[in-house]
Image (cartoon, rainbow, N blue to C red):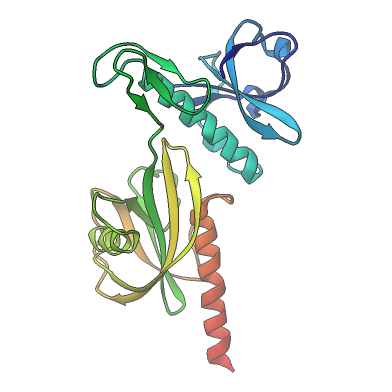
Length: 261
């Protein structure tokens, strides 16, 4: 339930606006509300971390508004709570009015939802399912540079699930569309909430089944096969993409060592 922040409130502060996060000194604020001039603001507890409450305050602050990516190297649990806060802030910002009747919405007191008191419609935050997949061919892994990554990072392929698809079908389609490669032995690995802006990444590993790489220039700057012991710049630690690459390196090394015996 949303409430007015007083000088009695303290904990971690997720202060978010338009997908950005307030990070003074580059860190998530922790302490009493008075330290951060939050007295009188409207907030809502969204969880607990290390025994202290985590509060969401939906507003812009000073120039220290950054992407939640700044906290990728933090503990997984804290990053997920921050991601929840950023996504909820965007959900409530985009649901000020009912999409059916146009009347003003209210924030639910009991759940993550927006309510219309006029037509009784109830809205929940929508999550966009995505797949991300590491593809192995012997001692090599398929890595690509995405058009949105201008910092030299090479990563595995990913894409959104379309209506009527299974996750395995999405893997096959996205890989074919982006790289012209066929895959086999698709297997699920793990998942990661990904608040950029509202995705759930579901990770897979797969094996090469044919086709010559021909990357989609609308999505990728380049794509190619890289030996496990000669990899380019990779995604940061803490991302599920990095985990997939590291897991694939383990398989490649095991295959090499097995062939050497």
